[in-house]
Image 1 (cartoon, rainbow, N blue to C red):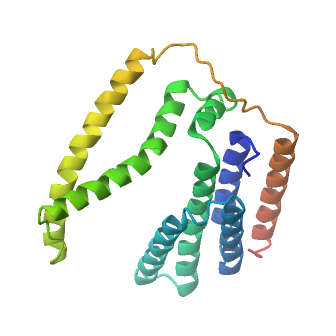
Image 2 (cartoon, rainbow, N blue to C red):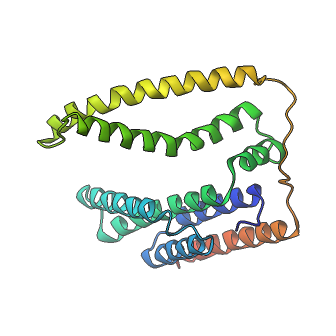
Length: 227
């Protein structure tokens, strides 16, 4: 996975998501999730992202319970949770095996997305881990000042506002600093150069053909009501 260019990984991400949407039975979705976990392990990123996978699994269970309480069957509840899990784990694989600079270059050079939109997409991904880390730091700081998170749901929401306010102020400060840095570096120019070589190679074309063939095969199985 790490040797593939970002375009191939993007196509693979959309292919896995497409397979998850096409499948409507439990067993194929379980197999798909297991394959994704194996790929994450082969990339050497499973241990680092184990907490994220566990959080996604908890959210998948929550979605399954909501589906069940909404009048759905047990099978549809399983499918809803597994489908969400399959469509999110594959994005973890993409982000842990791809440098964001390479992803930006691929979006601009191969997919022909305007640089501003590609930069906005990758910048949002880049700041997610920083935002989570800052959120934890603010919570710890407020806890040291005596903030209590105990009580009913409404009290927790009110107390959490003391975390949201400084977090938003720090985010605004970060945005202003980033905007100033981009302006000084000439952001918005029509000419862009990239150091990364993201041109697909032979193995990338083979991988793309395999994924397209598997997509056709999954659609055929779905038409035959086998997945």
